[in-house]
Image 1 (cartoon, protein in one colour):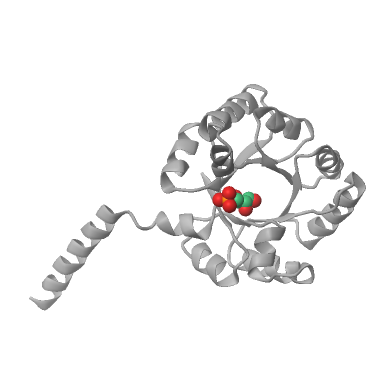
Image 2: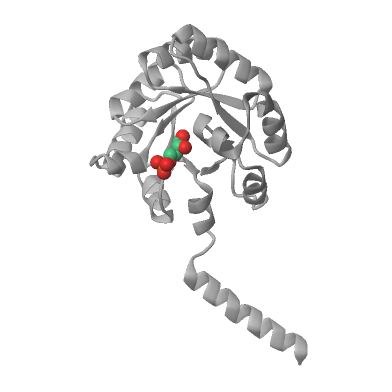
Length: 218
Ligand code: E4P
């Protein structure tokens, strides 16, 4: 199981990476803007996250044409061999992804809503495909069923493309995704924090601590 933090907020990323349960960090332009990380600071951000133990950092390329997406993708990949380049699963994004994959650059096709798009990503040689679970549900589709279909189709076609589920809204979503064969999940800090807040666990720990204190005082 690989869990990622979907944030570019340094303090949040640092605190969550310290838990040792997150494999990497994912971002997109909206997340970078929210955290105030400008393009010229991406290198610093990647260095920082990798220094804290992240194994992969995702940055999203930008531009309308395939050539532009490809050029920016190459720039992002040059920041570190541990950078994965995200691209939208559009015609231009797929074309850029195919070119980057041929150059040995790891890519992730993102904003995926339909199973056939996962297969397009696989055909383009992407390392990851990122379906948006919560947004599929918001749009009235059955996100879990669609992602399960993607996982089954990718497994049957025996490619190297893995699902990286995004737009995950609850700890229960994490379990259902894993049950449906998803091994990579990125989580907003809010959902990530909820993973550590199972009330019955906290209650049990409180009782352990109280007993431990009493033992110390005896
Ligand atoms: C992925 O790139 C997005 O940042 C994210 O998963 C969107 O999540 P949301 O739909 O809960 O906002």
